[in-house]
Length: 285
Image (cartoon, rainbow, N blue to C red; front, top):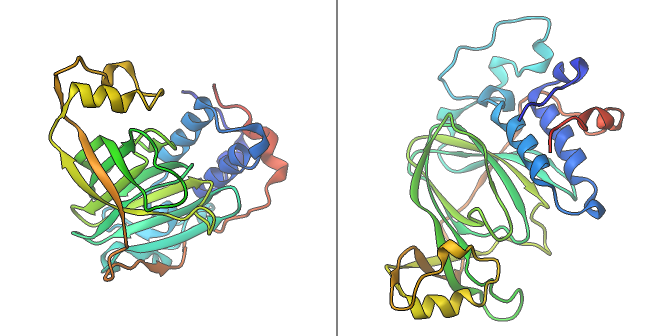
């Protein structure tokens, strides 16, 4: 998808451009959920973001040379060093009622346990390194209140290893791998945009998973009948064994799990950009 930005917007930092685009797309809940064209537009912007753009030095590229545009780039001596992350660390960039932006930084071997994103859209960009992803979508969403959540889920990614550079990914409330877990194969970092963000009314829930090697077609047909949004290709004749499912059950967060915080050291973010809103209407549907 071709996107044409006016010159004065191209002069902004990449993080500022991402913020402005998110503000346009997500700041009007009355307009309904984002369209596919808007999601593709945001993915393209995310694809252009690199580690140094968010104030992190991954040690792979030389520090940017000085120029008249230095104020748009983080100073090399102010960058967070990827080598310094000895546990999972979250670099908070921005959060408002409509969306949040931040970077999860992982040392090799660290795991972010299986968790969900209730009624959320999440765009993610792997900035550097390699990460193993395990993800699911509910076959039939469990009740939102009452007993602990549990149910059958279909596998979206089964220990899939993603390596930077790669395209930005997106998950939706009921598709794309709304429940996922990450394990860092090498030191890595993931830039996340969440809409709406987590809150007290919309907390994250953690899960344990038990893979189901196969399901009899009769059982699967009954399960799928409860989920009208299932794709026809996922349905199978009676008596055929179908793989790619797991039983998920809500669990407590491991006692030894914690996420550290680190300051955002990238280009300064201006959060009042109303003057530029009209200029961001040029993406393609």
